[in-house]
Image 1 (cartoon, rainbow, N blue to C red):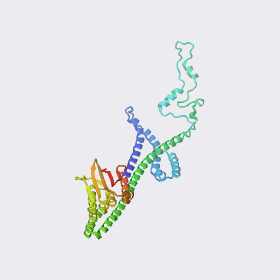
Image 2: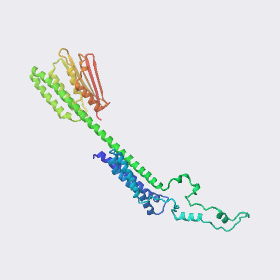
Image 3: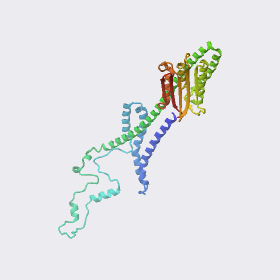
Image 4: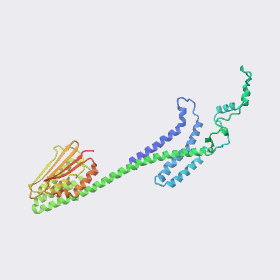
Length: 400
């Protein structure tokens, strides 16, 4: 289990622990409050704990067995049947009996209430007093003629509210099931919340993995494309100038070492990328005559920042491929500048027809995809095919 998932599991169980500790401590809060200084009646506390215990057992069964093995795996009917069975078994095995006799009188719950009921239901003997009213009957006669009061909490049958007509035998069962559903509902809500968080984390990791895989695929597409163009250049030099062909092979070996080893990393120092482009431009100088004006401008002080490798080579390749003519003077001007935490790369080359704008090749298409995957909407790529010149402006953010 990964560290992030382990932390979420620990947090989830910690929430369960806090909730149940609060529930079990609640019966003691009345004794610990500032207004009640009575000694703790542990018999009453234990009786409340016995009433809570079945719901705690039901939570354990649901949380660690039913939900992970049935509900999470979308086995809804088996989960529902086993949940109903678990509720029934826990209710039957509950330490507190769920029976209730509707015919029995309501048992007083304290000696104080017993004494009060006895006093209210027993006629009181009061000495005869007229209190200045000769025609008023004695008070004891008045009490003797009144009907007996029903016990506290009871109503005569004809005055009993409609709510008491509900079958009282089912009231404890209904309360138990209602509380059980509440416990299960809270448990499932917390469980699904943390499952959703873990699923989101896995989805992000999967997207990151897919992004890295796609970037590697696009990068490996660039390498053969660049290697093929360079071999074509060397092949053209072999018959023209053998010494220049040898120098070209040496320059090519340096660049291939960069591509095979250095460019395998996700990002490289900017100075390494600039050195790679310099080697490529020097290789092109060997091939072409002095009619080609090549100018490469870089900042005097290159900052120690990292960028993804092989972002600019496709544009420069395209400039040498479509911007050079052996009959007319040609130019390729490349400049890099650092402006406000951004790297601006401007490539301007001579243009003799509109072929360059229509046939940019697989290299430029791959770079577009890489830029979108790496930077989203945080980069700028402007390509213009104007009269006699072709411009490419690429702006990428530096750092995070």
